[in-house]
Amino acid sequence: MAPTTHHFNLDPKQVTIAALGLLDRQLTLGSLPARYSELNFTGGVGDVINVNRESRGIPVVAGGITAPITNPITGDKNVFAAASDRPLPSADRKAPTGFINESRFPVQLTTLAQNSTVLSMEQVAFDLRQFGSQVLSKLTRGFAEYFDDTTAAFIKANINRSSLTAGQKNAIGGDVSVTIPAADGTAATLSKRALNIRTALVDARLALNLANVPASERYLIAGPEVEAILLKDPEFVAVDYSGDTNALRRATIGRIYGFDIVIHNSFSLEMYLFHRSALFLVSACPAIPMGAVNGSIQNVNGIATRMLIDYDFGKKADTIGLDTMYGLATVKEDPDYSVRGTTIGEKFVRGLKISITEQPAG
Image (tube, rainbow, N blue to C red):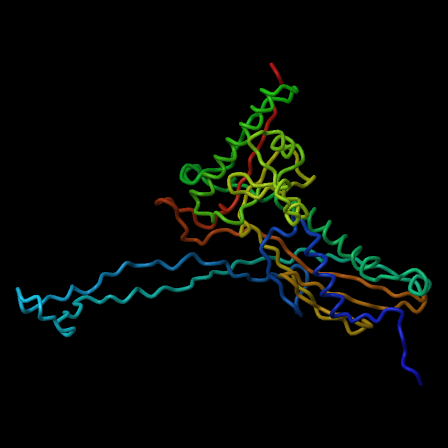
């Protein structure tokens, strides 16, 4: 008997890897959080995964050297001192032993995200020519849009310093508020609007610096309204002039004061600034069910996704779907974290919000 042949010879493992690669390239806001994933997770939605929080640097101690060699033959420049004449160090010069103290914090898997498509035998036989562009890219595009919208909602709800006390805000700064004049089409107003925004960004940068937030991988998330103000600012240089197509694909329109600017329609007159480590996306996949015709679980760039392939005998149709369990969390500091003698503790300081208010003319 001749072996069964298929219109598409799909290797679930390779298809899942390709799907995750497409998803990673299609993400905008969803690409910003740090990621952690687990494969073959034995729990379910609502369970908690403990994730390591990166420790701070191990302190360095400056040590001295032994005393210089002295020549015992005083006044004779032709006689050299022996190496054994160098005195032994009298104090212990061993560096104090550091410890990589990575504490753990819990992230709950709150949601099972999934989508699927049904392919009838007529579609498979007559309509499908390129599985990747016709099917796979549509599945991953839906996931990318979902994760972008979900991340946007999480940023709006959680990126702020409202939990800090008045004393802690005095030490490292809190959220920033700024008022800008309403647009009236004049050059003076355009300049004033941009100047106020840039002044607020400097205040926000100061607050992040005071909290020892790393200077690299900082993001400024804003909506089209803020983008228009910045692009009309003669002091702002957009990244599209540099030909950086990767940045444009990620919706990154430029850099200002060390922040990569990312624009998303979920935001209006507001800005959120944070380091990449401020957010954590944890994903996990359960095992492939015994009743599935075929399937694969893969992890690419910290995103765990399961692909299932099944067959409906009644409708004579294939079903192909992607799913993952995930949870989003903000990363708070260690309990003993302090700045300039002020105890901060387990508070969120790796990001903040800039509230913008338009002041009508007059």
